[in-house]
Image 1 (tube, rainbow, N blue to C red):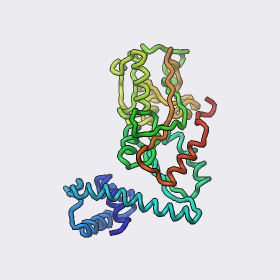
Image 2 (cartoon, rainbow, N blue to C red):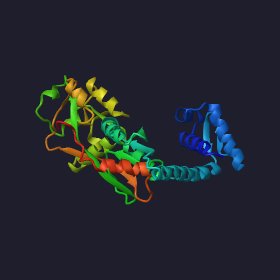
Image 3 (cartoon, helix red, strand yellow):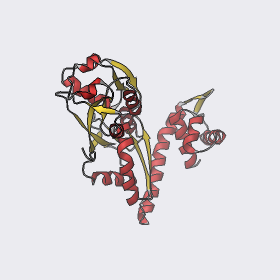
Image 4 (cartoon, one colour):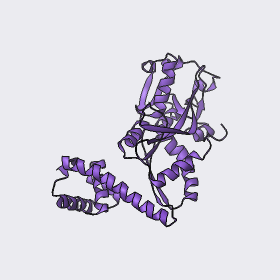
Length: 303
């Protein structure tokens, strides 16, 4: 049994697929199958039930995954301790981010971080706010960056950046010429929205409900799975939408979309770094958190 086999096993467990694991561990499927077979031989038990291309962890597989996570984290901490003893700052930061901060804020922030800590490896996975928080809760991620804060005493949320969510319309729309609109426009015009679980959608929904406007009252034309899809839909004239100002800078400069103020509606939010209070952070992740905390609140240039 070796650590690399355990790492591969964990990827297969999380992906529920030998094929999908190949893109993560950069090994062939036969090689991955052989690594799992070695573990099954070592522990004397079956770890997965294979049905065609689908696999399901056995009870033994569930147990091994829990302990493998602890073993791998302990191995990382051992290496970090030895690097620290030698005066080196190395390690891995495994970061999950929701769409807006992951796409529009993290690249520049990580560029600054890598200049200061070039030997720290950072890996990022992009998903919606709900999934990022769930993965932090489950211990799959040490830290996340999300666009919505939930009430849970087990989690820490530290504000990192500011954002405004605005109503955007196609540049050729009759609405683009208006100085402002009222909330009633949301009952008349086709609205494009993000999928449930999106931080942007959750924030807009909460603000509208405080104004006495129910989500079901929206004239929803489409529910889309990404901010880029929503933007493209607005540009194409499929409807109007609420989007982060971080996400629309390029389209606004090119004259493809227009912002239209909604009378009495001001949707502001923060993006938060989230981590579990009960689990110690690796040294590299703590350094990344301290680096982010040293920054003043990030806001859009020119806003």
